[in-house]
Length: 67
Image (cartoon, rainbow, N blue to C red; front, side, top):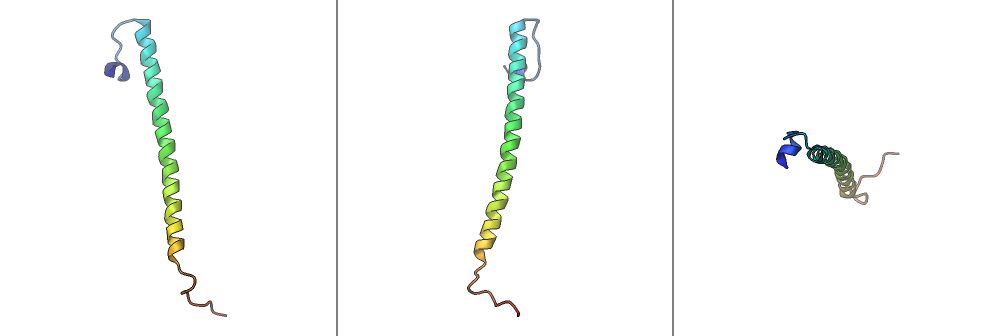
């Protein structure tokens, strides 16, 4: 199976070729899903970091604005 993933064709068996194409497509689908999930995770991490910064600011102890 590892040879099929790397593109090795061990003959002209159409079943083997079809399985190789199916596995290659599955790998591409999983890689694209991984990229999408990583991007979503990065956005969520940035948002959570921003929320923590905003929570750390205590409005009750802040100095009044100059008027």
